Amino acid sequence: YSEAAGAYLNAIKKSPENPTAYFNLGNAMYKTNKLDEALKSYDNTVQTSKTNPLKQNAFYNGGVVLQKQKKLPECIKAYKNALKLDPNDEDARQNLERALQQQQQQDQKNNKQDKKDQQKNKDKKQEPKPQPSKISKQDAEEKLKSLLEHEKDLQDKMHKVKANSIDKPAKDW
Image (cartoon, helix red, strand yellow):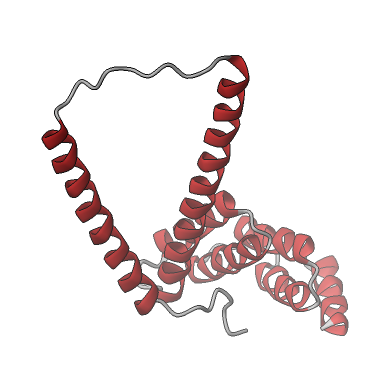
């Protein structure tokens, strides 16, 4: 792949507006684990390409690189751009769903950490004062039961999504 990357760089020097050379250079850089260079090549492909299929593949491969780098917001944007150009690309759709789930999990983790930090700060400032309950015990039990059922439904949906998805964020080069 290193030799191929050199050949693609020579081709780009001779023809700087060659989107196929940029795309193939990106693939070679990805295979040699030079992810930032691969991403730049895919961006150059998008900038120079006049055909949607090549742009779509560059967005998709860029999304794969960004997902590998754990840059989820940018990754999600890349997959969405790929799907705008080819709405029937199932690989892009599955990878987008996976990236959105990872983003959601990361947000939940960050929110939990923020709540813990807030609680620590609150505990340092003052002792909590008990407040009288504003709802009856029966209402509280009904709300708790409703929340538990809602959580069970969400868990069932998450299990179905995980069961249906195939764990393959990378495209078969």
